[in-house]
Image (cartoon, rainbow, N blue to C red; front, side, top):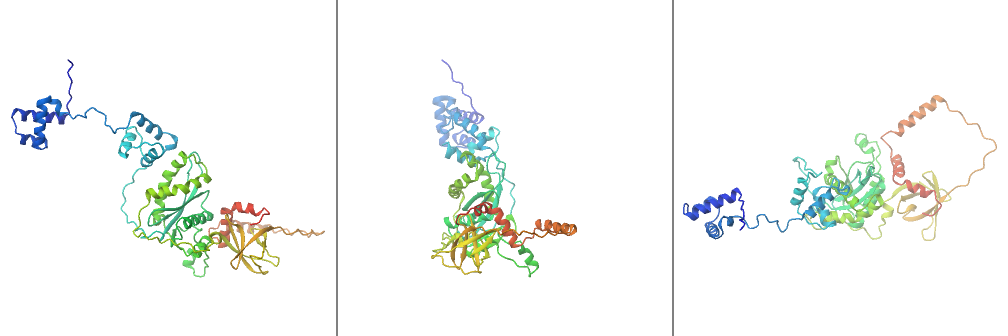
Amino acid sequence: MRKTVISLTDKELKKSTVIDQAIKGYITVKEAALALGISTRQVQRLKKKVRECGPAAIVHKNTGRKPANAISNETKQTILDLIQSDNFENCNFVHFKEILSEEYGIEIGYATLHGLLTQNGITSPKHRRRFKPHRRRSRKTQMGLLIQTDATPYRWFKGDRKYYALHGAIDDATGQLTALFMTKNECLERYFQMLRQTIKNFGIPCSIYADRHTIFQSPNKKKAEVDSDVNVNDTQLGRALKELNITLISAKSPQAKGRVERVWQTLQSRLPIEFSINGIKNIDDANIFLERYIYKFNSQFAVEPMNAESAFTKPADGLDLNRILCIKVKRKIDSGGVFSYMNKTFKIVETNSTGYIPPNVNINVLLSNDIGIKAEYKGHIFDVLRYVPPKRKKKAETKAKAVPDPQWHQVYSSKTKIQKYDSSLCDAEILKFLDEMSFGHIERMIDSTGMY
């Protein structure tokens, strides 16, 4: 008959020796209980088991047996193959655990996953920084009291080394994302889209906390603090915020709007992975995905506000956001109802419903991706048509052009060059640059002969 070899650990060997001495009468049950740190009743049970089964009774019944809740070797290998694939490059362990549950149906504890990956030489890219004590600003008590907004350039798509700007807004009280929108560059148009998305999903906030980008405030504001004679006009976004009764608060540093900055760190860690596993490789698909991802992000990271009553206000009945969230400039029409904009001419279309515009009056020209180009006069919106004036006949004799003085031409070119790169731009120049950067494709629309 084959004998079973019992291998005892140091703890089990000590327990076996003490119980054996208690059985032989060398020590009392109470002394054995004190030596092993167990109760006297447990010592009595162990003495009975050792008499019946021998020293094997000391060994736990599950020794050498695989736990019932242990993951299989096949599942371990699947996890290791996934984490080492291109889709999950630079994926932190917490995010990877969530993806295993949602996408692959693999339920595993974080401690187990961390142990499995680190034992195989895989480290998380999300290292904890050394704790730096600082005082955080308390959250607002209600939703909608303060919205923090910003844009961050990043390489969002794997295999694409280009940087794209993600525009976003976050509620200060709850940490909820109210809007996410991606484009090639940080621009005025996408901040309009961000505001439109926030108002559609939540309502009109009380105030917005943003940096000192020229999209939000005029660069002349700093000059006005020193020289009171400097005139400071509202930017297009600043004008839109005033029309919506939203207070603009300027942050003096990135740390001042730390909550939206920390959101960027989270999104820069997670979104490239989410884009990769969902096959998203361009801005259009990313914006469609982000509309759904906002709800997933908020359900995971948002917190409850101190006051459950929301401070978001519902837009008034009849409020037309298209008239507010757009570029709005003043122009003067001639006696024929024609005005010029961006070196092109347009004619106003008058109907019985819109009314009549008298000649030689000032109008507002509205420009955005949603409405194209419109004209506004006393609250009425007019469509416009591209108007090409007839060419004048050339005169038979043309005067010879005066040849500019070389010295004067050199000075003029030098001044032009200096002005081109001057950082202190006037409001008209800022508006022109915003038009070119944000609405370049609208200029191509202007060249067509359709109605706007």
